Length: 587
Image (cartoon, rainbow, N blue to C red):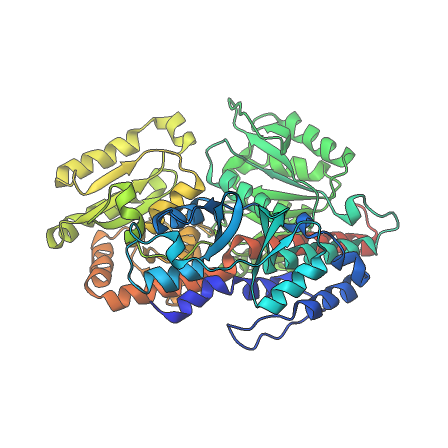
């Protein structure tokens, strides 16, 4: 395995640091991938910048900055550890005997001591590869002591105990994120005549669809909100959920208000609710189809009534918008403080279409989970895919996904290797089900039968959790995105596939164009099954090429992991508020 790949997951901390302080007031020079930070010097940097005394930061009990992590027994097989890491999105597993820590296993341990050594995941036990003895600290000890221990022992993770019993873990990154939160809130509060409660933290509302509604943007918003919450730089989130006309959902406590898609009064009342609340700023997740009216124009009514700053995230940018679609987008620009695009190409497109409004545009990539780089064989057995060459596509099923072109590409591939199986993962899009039921899925099934591919194509017809999606991707050898049209500026499926280190074959839709041009993924033609066949064949016949695309994908995704994306959004929110305050102009 490429040595750089091993480093990419481990140095996520260094990558993340660059997003912490965008104004460059604090710069940390990192001279090598294996560099370790002087924690005391770092703390002094933060305290100086945020005008905190050293004690204000360093005397906080370390228990306030810990998190719980999965644990395991010394006699568990390594397969259990890998499963816990992926399911819990955790970089380390603490090993316990009678609730006391006796060891720890990190991604690096698995990479170096199991994968590189080519050991059997079922036969190798935790006790054989865990790091020991463990370094720990009692829960009431101050952060100062934790930093000193981490520096002295040259470690990134520190186990926290209460009377010797394990209660949690703190990390280098976590302490950085907490410090970053203090920095932002102190910096913003210094510009306010009346300080906020909660140490100056701001309150952010998110206007979007939200789980349990089955919607890609709902999933995106949930993951963004969770990532921002971990930073501890803002108050708990306030979700303003968009409901479809007949939708009634059992929302979590995060949802504070609901808008009925077709009810214009509902939009107006939502704006009034926000105006009268302590919410400081709104993040609008925009897709034309989420809102009612001509090209979703009712969202403009909401924005016109709103008196708070707005950051709008665009999930679709039309190449040639009709007059009404352009009018709606112009309204969004007019009433937004900033507009976020998830592909740099989107900036150029908006510049060409909207001219002088583009000074508001900011690029923040689509987020993705931070997961270990693993070989596909590790999860195949548990998913019933042992011995198969796995191709896959996931997402809510609809005609716009182009799955039929991937199926058309299979006969020649299967002829050369009968082990191939193509997984079509995900339920039919709820809006599609309302309009046409399962007609598209039935069409795909008929196509599969006509080619005699029943043993080579499998539908996973469920709305999967994030961890389930990751497991299927980890078991995938080649990921296929056969979108038939160019007009898609963001793709969660592409981001997920990159983050799991997959060799990817994709058509050149807008977001994918950038990744193709950077040599990170392999491009195929629109609506061209033969092109897909050629790309997949090239990868399967040349293991060196396959591995090259895998490592490039994983490396490319490191700047897109959720902690980095979340910090960029938080920074932008504070920037928007500071800009409003400096102008002293009410909306």
